[in-house]
Length: 354
Image: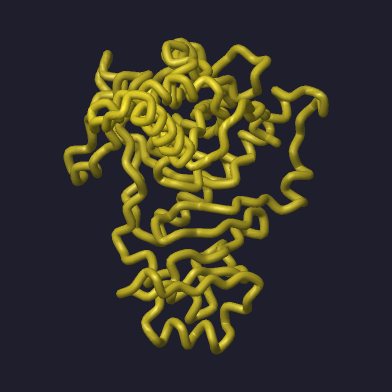
């Protein structure tokens, strides 16, 4: 199950089927970091390392998984190694090491140390709902979501999407929910929120397990703070933390809902993933439709793309131009080092339902 949902709107219909999408993603299948590579990223099977298919499809919902691996080499360790090497040269040759030579020494030491550095892997999953035009990414940060979108664009040639853009000030709407004690139809307030000063983001109050109707919460709102996220429950089926950017975090289905999952065969990983993906996509369709209505988000399905223009940047003539897209990035991170310990280790791929 997804724990987060960064949501985007397709700007053209998505017309690839499972095999077509698999073939396109296959050009960027994940491979581990080479000895002197700082990072790599690519597509891996949503069902886990033993599976071959890079796409798992239920109906018109396509699940994909991006794996990013990076080598962790502390900057302080490299700096210390360079200083030691410089000291050795200066003592042995009785001369001062110039800046250009120091730079060369650093590059040589990086080449020596990188193959011995730890590797860390991260799996980011997403699904494309071709029927309703949603792209949902299980990412807690914009950076991780943008990396996946960039890799999709590199793999498909073009993948125009647009984040949800409320036509109202979402923080004010969330604050009004707390003041009135009543949210939109089908939505109940829970016991968590984040309140932030409208003028100073450093002035933030985080509440969990708190009665949102309590006087102290109202006092924060009356003195200039606004709700930038709030815990809600959708029809007693799904709990989540709704952000002012309409991102969804801490997704958790009610036990009664997960008990409804019909896998057919409890030992069949594919059947379990089918059931979970169907449940997740159907519930989020309903939640997103309600949120788009409440926050006045333009969410019409895009017009059909002309033949041969899959992924072309077309849109409804009557709608405003979409927000700037994330530029495609490289599969490798910039040649930088990380503040982590060195050694040899690697995280293990896990099936997406773990």
